[in-house]
Image (cartoon, rainbow, N blue to C red):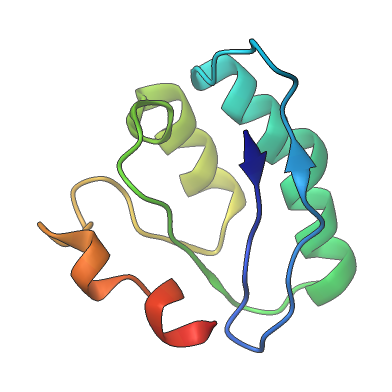
Length: 96
């Protein structure tokens, strides 16, 4: 699996490759966010305000990940804010 982020200004995060056979659960996903995603965002944007949006993959909706995101991202759409049919309203559709 590969994880990537695309920002509204067109910048793209480095690709994060997950080794074959590794199941993306809440612990693996949280490790990616903490060890790779957040440091990249801080290096690129400093204290700039941004909204972090993700889809409804099981690891994204876990209580552990939701709480971590609320504490670490200035504006975070939690699973109760996600649109009911998010692919139709996904920022990625309009940003790339």
